[in-house]
Amino acid sequence: MSGKFDISGLDDVIHGRVRLGIVAYLASAEVADFTELKTLLEVTQGNLSIHLRKLEEAGYVSIDKSFVGRKPLTRVRLTEEGRAAFGRYLKAMSQLVEQAGG
Image 1: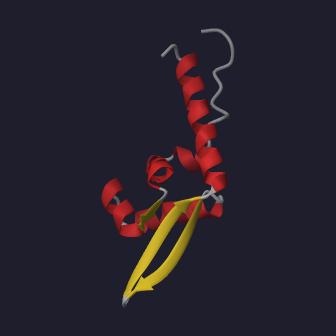
Image 2 (image 1 turned 180 degrees about the vertical axis):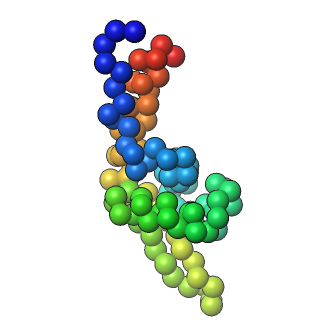
């Protein structure tokens, strides 16, 4: 193979399996609650919290915490910045697949 094999476009914040799952799901679902994501991705509460915090710190998701009755409700949305980052990530993955001859 000649030329550069470029992985620089892959966003490390999104690239993790769980974070990619969160971002991909939110790209179509618009909003999801914490329990929905935990069940969908089959992760523990602590694991999901860590990944959501990393996405929030990057500005890719917004997290709204409230109560419904006495039960806490955490809702997660993809921000415009997160949506743009996901688009760039998908483009980089597509280019990587092309480079690999796929």
